Length: 407
Image 1: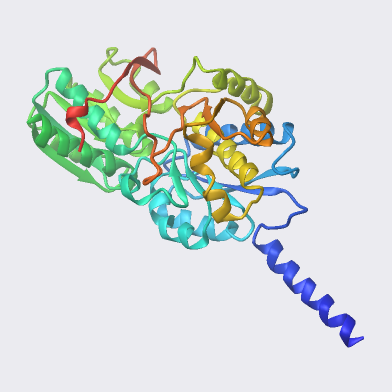
Image 2: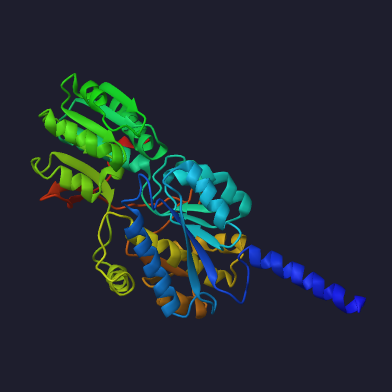
């Protein structure tokens, strides 16, 4: 009896360990979605989750991952670094890879996901920390805040401004592009910052901060804030009758801000935002999947295509690795998204090419996902200038980064 029972006990214990680490070869492949479903990022939460769910639907419709269903494990990070750490700890033992992460969460988890060897995608991380710290177990498939900061300074320059003020919320996601803007504006363009007002979020009113930022009669004001602070700031701007140009960070490109600014002249508020590749066959396939699995056409400007692409890339990397093991998956990421390789635009086509023994180069609805192999950052993010028309953000034109302003 002892000879029989001891091996059985060992198998049960080992099985418990495997199951707790998301490595059950018989169950679904579990992909984490750790995003701000409440708090400052909650405007992005539902559309981001819709994009993620559409990807899971497409993956399962095409046979799953290595013959197993994909399952999305959803966790709210409360839009805070502390919430990201707590949320990750709740799901880390059951997931095979992680997505959905924003800037604050990425910075908070950077060391942890590397120690866990957890393949992690950042579909909405602008933080400049990832300019140099990514590339092994964390990859960014959106533009860096460096890009956003440079583009905003470039816009101010091209509009002929020389005197600019800043009004910036003290969080990683808002200060990161603002600091780039300030550096480029002063040191590359030679413009003047006449006021740099930083504030902590959470107040009901920002009257004093708005008055301080506009006191010197600036030609333009860069506002970096989340929507919960941005709306009262914008209302104060309107109530006081200011007419300075407003340049906003990506965090303020949400419907509530556009609606609040509907009475302002077209072009008064400008923003730079990554834009989708609407002409790509990948986008039409994504739009159909979004309609099927979310029950509506996709919006724009909420990283929903980036959320979709992250899980397609992870699933294709697992297919190429023939494994869900973290290091094995990580080793395949660049082989999936970078040239050379057969160009593919859908999960099904990517799996088919891999099964034929081909290397692939996946482009998704968010555009080219070619990554720098040392940093894990997008090589060529596509950026559009957005303005508000009729209470909605609308792309005005796609612009190229001025290489002379690079840092």
